[in-house]
Image (tube, rainbow, N blue to C red):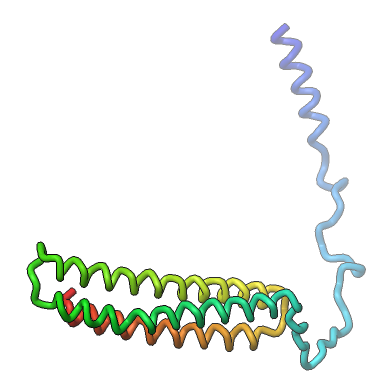
Length: 163
């Protein structure tokens, strides 16, 4: 039986081998050659943003503005609390209250940052869909300005608290 398998395998493999004259040429054929020119329009305009995205932009902007206003409203109280706990012992209630006030402000800043993340997603989606993204970019710039202001406030409080 093994002898028969070896002989049959040899015959099958022998059938696969043939002269190189029977294979087609791998050279480029005339039909495969490219000729002519391709004209590209000088400018291609992106599509306008969908009404759904424009609606989302309005909602995200409103959410970011509300979060920023909440931050601005909470900042003076946090400044007073941090000032009261500036040179307090780590085990004191004043120090703990200062830490909590800064954490509250960090949480409010995070809400504004979520709006920026949503705008980043809309910006990427508009880019991939080849839609006009100027309105999204303007909203992003607005939210980034909010975050810069909030970051400056938090940095000031951290410097006062010695963190």
